[in-house]
Length: 436
Ligand code: NAD
Image (tube, rainbow, N blue to C red; front, side, top):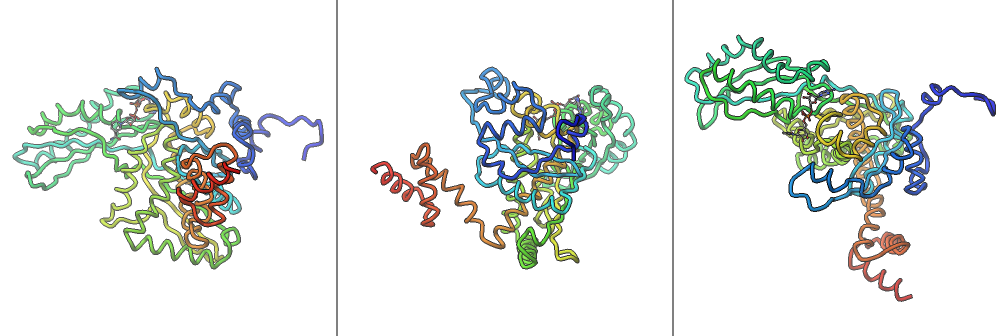
């Protein structure tokens, strides 16, 4: 479009930025890091840090948890081709399982042909719980708590002026009664807009500060005061259309819909279906230093919120014969707090993503979850998952059997060709090759 030597303004270069790559995997570690640095505008130091395979120093690690003796590094890969809400993203994923990053990139390419993903995060509302026990008149306590809502919200907000300054803070108080074997209890919910935080510390601090006033209002004792990981007010929806041509024809679309129906009506299948989603979700959550246990707990509770455990995605065939997919799940992730601001790789991951709010991060993660799910059920419903998976898995088996350098690929290729991807066979092939 521009003649040679023509000046292209920086703003236009930024707008032209694309996450679409073919052959990204062929570039080698430093070639890939170069592309990522270019895309994300990393400094030379950051580009170098990205390729550091032990970036966490002892002092930082020792500050993060207790009793530190070392580190457990995981590979950091980049999923390419993602376009979400019209913006291109390179997505960092930290994961030990082969084929996840490739599968996400592949699905993102398929979605791209129809405009990519559309995603929308709900406002970042988290729920804190207070358990009130020892009440004589539980129903009366519900009424008294609700009557004091305004004061409780003011007290909660007084303990986090920073959050309030950023536009967040306590928004609402709810109260209900639960019946237990130990008698009736009053459960008070504090609803907090946590802005760009995951929110656990923010919400827990507020709940602890409300314990005394709630005891004074109700005449009971406040036992537990902690957030719930069932962040059902903080859900994200991601959707995409996958063209039938990209998926391998209308027959492939029909097979994927049938595979989805299996998951929608069978808890054993639904569990594995959702595990496939979490392959993508957790890898980005982990890469950005977020709390993947919190996300996991919330995802599975949300999957069973109707009383029946269900898939987090829905797939159907549209009137053009293309596949429509939608994922909805809670995603309590943040850009401040936790390890996001302290772990050097998490900081780089956030910079590579270029996300500006926790909501935008959640929208990316949900899109990756949908992409990952589509890749898995497409493989299962068409060629079977092992063909693609075993090729990559074979390399791990070869390494475990003792192969090094170029022997890894040779041993792996032989096992795949023979369709015997096993540790004993890897050892035999390796011995044979070494003897030659
Ligand atoms: P945090 O307390 O470290 O940071 C949040 C605080 O940062 C806010 O309270 C606010 O004061 C400040 N802040 C500055 N800029 C902000 C902005 N733009 N938006 C929002 N807040 C801003 O972190 P957190 O997110 O409250 O807690 C997350 C950590 O809590 C994670 O490490 C998680 O593992 C841990 N945790 C989880 C659980 C659980 O999931 N059940 C329980 C306890 C702790």
